[in-house]
Length: 151
Ligand SMILES: [Zn+2]
Image (cartoon, rainbow, N blue to C red; front, side, top):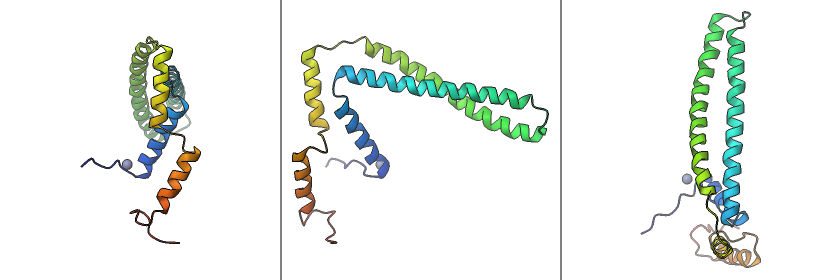
């Protein structure tokens, strides 16, 4: 028996977002651009924050108006965060290098229509009339296991 996909709220949010990205970016080219923009924005934000934290760290270290104890606590926290952010930045940089390879691939119009066709099957528009009717029928079925008969 196939295992049911997890239905916790985090996973449901993920499925919804996953389908939305297929529905709104149904071609190979659109997926390339979307993923490139997403990796770049993540990288820009992370490296800006890293730079800002480094600046604050050196400012704090040279500040003589706060006690050494206060300094140590702040510096320790900040160094920890900086270490983590720096490794994230390194991973993002590697992902970007791999994404560049994906960008080298060009797809013909014929194959792009296949992408669009499969995208429609994978992630149909939830506001599509046929689907709304189908959902309504589904939820009205009395023996549907999640229907607790509460009116
Ligand atoms: Zn889950």
